[in-house]
Image (cartoon, rainbow, N blue to C red; front, side, top):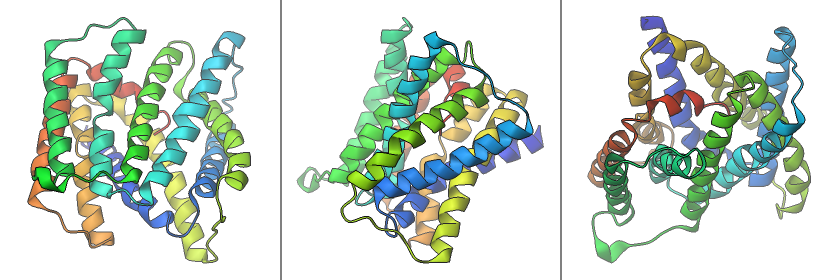
Length: 297
């Protein structure tokens, strides 16, 4: 049990640190090219795992459309908007916005999966929105300023919520590795033409260290951490695992302080507590979703 929690904590640290990694990488690579390259290395890693396990399964025609939508929206758009947003968005606030994904997922589940919207969900959403507003305004209505990058992060959050719903539906018929592999392949294929059409100019770092950082974070954050989570989530209580996930914004704060020398403010801490508290309140009865949310994280 201790080993399982240790690996799960490692995954949360990697996912929380990804906001800082993304911030660093978009300074050296243009966002569309970065998206394509990162997906390339993730796909190569997943193909290697699938080949090692001899785990290549055919997809039924009725599931093919869902895989295509998942690859385009849940993988490509999710990754591309994240890197575009990270060019200007604040890392801590971006982490806090993405932390509200389970709330949006709950409302989407009510629409598409006919699940019930509870008073707890509504109250939790209200508390989380207050927390985000508090951080954005820095505690003062006179300082309202929304960066364009944050709007892209909101799109990232929406695409992630859509990914969760589609993955939830597909997981009833297809194993997680197959869903993750095929959706990432679709996302990578879609990213190729846009990498050369949307970036002007195209930026590619000439530093070996930057390329090593790109490859390493792609494989560890999106490959190794996902597999470790899938393998260890079975051995722990889902509610405790979901509590660990709420630590991502705080991980982003600490790693941002260490790597980017970004100070942690009292407003960010108070806003984070409100947002995380709202998410916990809203998703208290939806813990089962968390086991399904990391296929493309």
